[in-house]
Image (cartoon, rainbow, N blue to C red; front, top):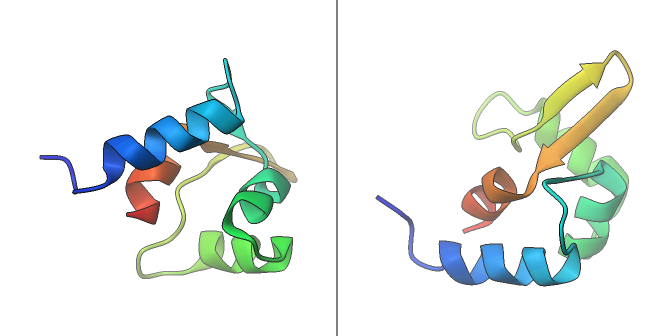
Length: 72
């Protein structure tokens, strides 16, 4: 079951990043109007962490659909 507001958030993210499946932590920080350090802290949280995929030790991407679900 989808959370209320998920489709709207997903649409907004897809408009900002057309044709993309993932975004960088810096782009996520820009979308949320915060510093990239806050995004990295949210990724590292134990309870309700920001969804991400680690591609390498220092390469992280954030799937847009998972971010939309997390933000609502």
